Length: 115
Length: 117
Image (tube, rainbow over all chains, first blue to last red):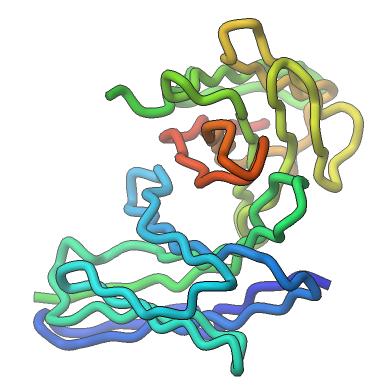
């Protein structure tokens, strides 16, 4: 079965704190892709990052970093020095390597960053 | 470059009616995907169209249908509306992808909020 679990339903931090959003996935495919999307209150899903199963390099983009560990089936997302504009719902998603096309989403983590 | 666009932004219907939602993909993208985001149910895959054909379908009844036009835009039709169809409907598009259709990153539009009374 394919599944994505985001155990943290809601997280609240104060501005400038670091915060890590957890994502654990399940899949039987050896080739798969992992994604993070951000959904601000406006509703649009904004693409943040894509990771292929054969590429375990961690990635940093400004204040954002991602830690992909196949051994624990996790793809965690860290925001350093959080800002109020980071407040949103963050979704982790999985797509298997076949051509089914669909993304399997976690339930999302609502992040609130307070000034 | 313009992103994925969807219309209308909001749609209010009554039970039993039909709803039509529209989506225009990013220029050059050939695949269009539809997802439903209902309260408490998360984001669920509905349909995938590529080059005018339905390629995959999620676990939804047949009254959810759609099509893709030659210009790659797409329509989602929901017949015999039920109260539980109230949700945000998100459309996404992707290019063909080096590994074939449906293998590239999906970019989402702002959604259509459907309310069924």
